[in-house]
Length: 303
Image (cartoon, rainbow, N blue to C red; front, side, top):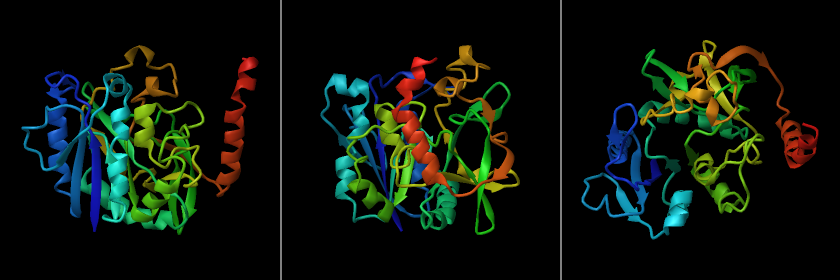
């Protein structure tokens, strides 16, 4: 088995320190690459950057410098630059991964994915992950993107899989070769269509990170999270190493925002509640949501 891992590294101020640990972006990148090199399958790491800062750094990765103007760089277009090389590699690896520099994908995460992804892929489902941060005040881990509890599940071969129909964005994606080839052939690979989650469009960098499983796309029927003892499988959680979101929108706490302003609302053991089994009618649900999204301007007139 082998995997190609591509990491964009935007580093306009190399010595700036951030996050609870007060480290440079390079420090998080280096720690993450060292972590990735411990994966139990053969892996090649490609870091896509825009300046000379990494030229003299010792990293177990191939560094690719892109020519990009300041305006496009500030907008986030560096995150698109890896796609031409990934496309060239389409027949060289069994798995493909796009990863933000501070998202710490671990061996436990890999084994979780290998355990479930074939089973779900046969039924056109996407296996979900959840990104977390630690609140350094109460020492608890909080889910970054899930701001409302999930309560619907499917029974697949005798196991509960909870449906993440709220927000399945998780700062990275990983697909097998077949999924990746279908992604390459789709209108979503080249960003000709905007990815969204029926509440808002994703920005430029988020459209890179959401990959082929945004809620409005039509390849995967749904994103599912395996349930163990009424909680998500513990190996679905991935650490956001910078750990800088928990207090970022503190002024919006307890205001029930469904976007990034509601970040770190739920502890990781609070995500599932009152689970109810539902049927596989995702085609109709998605059709209804797409119609509602496309004609959302009508509802706004009456608000």
